Image (cartoon, rainbow, N blue to C red; front, side):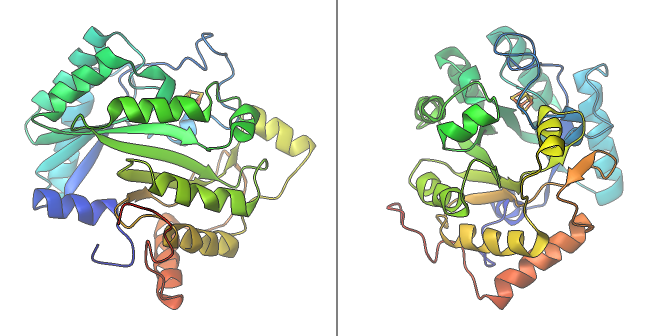
Length: 307
Ligand code: SF4
């Protein structure tokens, strides 16, 4: 860890000897919380357009999405190594054959060194893990499990459709297979106190998690959460409050966990709350400043056993 926290970009650069660029793709998978298997409305905060870049559309063949992404990044940044990021919806929610085809197409492109696969913990099984394990023998393979919260009361509230134990089971199934494991959590759910949310740092630090995405709860238009919030508003993170929360959280987090994301930035056109009026770059600068002002270091208050 060169800086005050263990960030993904520098970690990748050290591991692969150069900057690794992410190519976001939409392989056209859906999600059991939307297709009727578990529900049709999705998690209460979910509006996929809030995290889906406009250029990646599932109607465009996967290989074209990847090639276009690579062409753009090579031209603009002289990039030569790429991680294909299967981002929207649930990217292990298909048959093993379909998954093998999609992942294989990505890994066949020149310069692609690996995959990052966003998924739900209830959408993996031993066959899918076996597929990922075989790919991980030659490539970097990161599975990012959407956890959102370790509290079942929160998972119930957000209509997630799985409980915390399901996440633990998925992590256990994935561990020891050469597959990198990531988790994604949301801070600021109205079902949790700040202390409860902070306690997730302690819990995750003691699991075999290598990567973490954390961001503030955002209420975006056209979601059940927006309807609930507008009829009965609840507090969301103020900007300064979130900066301090983040520092507190990261201090309690194992220094071995690589941080992939610190905050969310839904487009202004769909964001209802919290409105911070800051650009991505301004937020990054302010986070770094807050860490420096507080002389904070990742893991300095970690109650974990692994170091
Ligand atoms: S957040 Fe993910 S799991 Fe939840 S409804 Fe949206 S795509 Fe599905």
